Image (cartoon, rainbow, N blue to C red; front, side, top):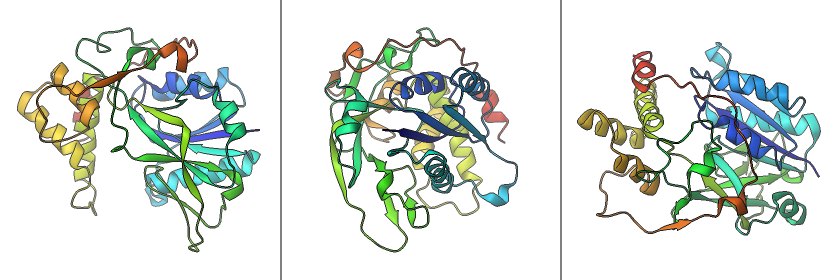
Length: 305
């Protein structure tokens, strides 16, 4: 059995090493597209590709904007490349902040061996939380999941991501939804799908103050520059952007709330109930060795305007 993972990354220096080292504990190969990172992401990816020779392919953004840079188009090209390169049994599109784990702690490769290959599988997010007093000041070289032991109990409101058996992947007909939430066919033929019972995506969207502020400031500014921006596009980044304008710097509680309920203008009083994960049960011992060297969020922001 062969498993291929593809993904599009940008300015993920704080998490990219954790993501790659963990993902290669169950995947055979990875194809990652660096969409013009300005932090230490390219440096880390280069050294990881040298360490895991033949198992990591790094694609870099070209300066030719005529090719387009829509996430779904890029992800589709990566899936096509992985499919043609080695004909894997499973194709998995992931973001750098998504760690595929089993609910029970059962080895992922064992789960994939037993999974039905006649349908795509939806895997739900489990949102992990950077709680006040936790994670913000720990060693940046630490394996990212080791900083997060609490997660939001409500998985129902989170969108699911799709895992694809290659037997159902048709290069000429397949369309991947933006965000990797679904797979369609151009010709309208139905693709059988079901929700995964064994797997979840541990989602580490908010990993610290600088990271979320940099993401919001740069993200909302970039969104404003889009010539054909939709009315609600980037609304979540604008909420954080406005909060930063009001406060200048986000508090620990602000950072925690972003992880708990996402980007919402109105927050209920008090923190919701959280579950607690046993890190040793779900993750192997992984040692990270590279410093993230992320630019200060305001420096990166000012380079965009």
